[in-house]
Image 1 (cartoon, rainbow, N blue to C red):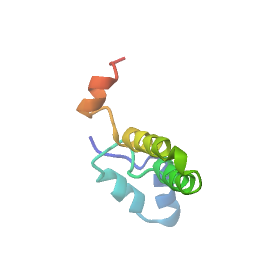
Image 2 (image 1 turned 120 degrees about the vertical axis):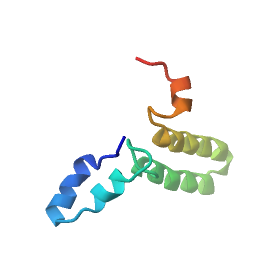
Image 3 (image 1 turned 90 degrees about the vertical axis):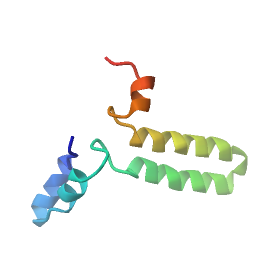
Length: 87
């Protein structure tokens, strides 16, 4: 299954380029990008919180791991098929 740039293809159309379409159509994970904005923003937050509130560092990094894992897993992943029941 090929990836799709979705709504980002409109940016390519506005600027007359093919950057997003080329990048997403060649992606090994068709349903997302790594790292996504969710993972990138939470990484900055976890680093900030770990610096100023070090007692909670294991929780911040566990949350970060969870977001990274959830952005990478798609329906084609065998781990996801084992953990998430088919609907």
